[in-house]
Image 1 (cartoon, rainbow, N blue to C red):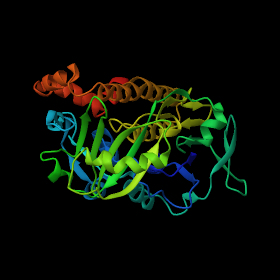
Image 2: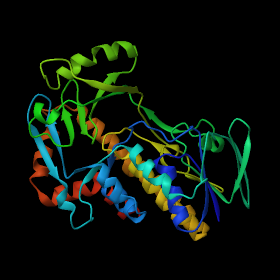
Image 3: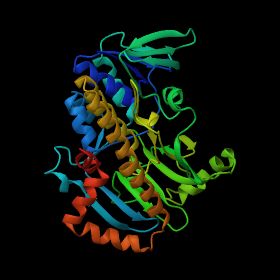
Image 4: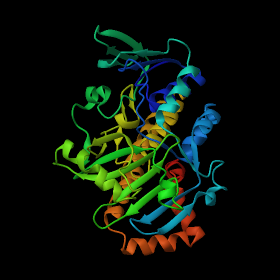
Length: 378
């Protein structure tokens, strides 16, 4: 079996390595001249760690990442509302924690495990055609053609593969706020004693998220949709001082300001073409489910392909779409709504009760860690 994969991000390379390990001949087409270096996603949930362990890359990823066994809900300017301990999942997974590690570190571990020449850089997909026996993909400025039995489109939110199948249709919503992310090397653990590696801060006016990675802290702030970018970047130092005040402006290494969407493709299968990751579904980053669900897409769809069973392939694609719609989008949108509700809310009382009840906390952690999404759909 010969499979073409569009995209050499964490989803595309995970799909490619899974296929290779299962005996398929794989060609990866990547639009960029090299692997992306941006941080982007930075949280790996337990099921993803299990899948990456199966591919043999987890030990190296763990060595580069930061194990986070707990996460907190906090009130901005106040204390901890609730802390959830993922050790409650010790009977459900060998990895009862989140791993904080930039996705760019994963792709650099996956690439060397593929046969030389598998990944073709500078080959953006420009079009495709398919027939009962396979798929022909056109890529690059020279219009080179690649032929395979199947194509997995893992070429991101602006997927050329998805557009070739469904045009501009990509059902969903755009959030009223943009998200502004700043990366800093400030010692937030000293400025906010007791802070966890992952923190969701409630506030009636301006909620935020604080995430620690091995290289820096990331601060995510909601930002109006229609203000000039320059104005938002100018007021970022004042906003950061409102989070914690070291007595001087924060050191900010990098900022990103972007629109946020919740969208899902009409189908994850069209003939001999499958969609995975952001090419198939995009969501807000609250809960860290985007890359993780994409990794799950990659492993499960690749494994289904190698069975050669058309019914299994169709069912797997439908199952992954159900997860994107019913678990990932519902959970991440719910996270957004709850954070916007403010700190002194009924939800804060609910969180305190949740943290105090190990049975309820485990059930919550099974959902937030994405374990439930795989078990229930399976």
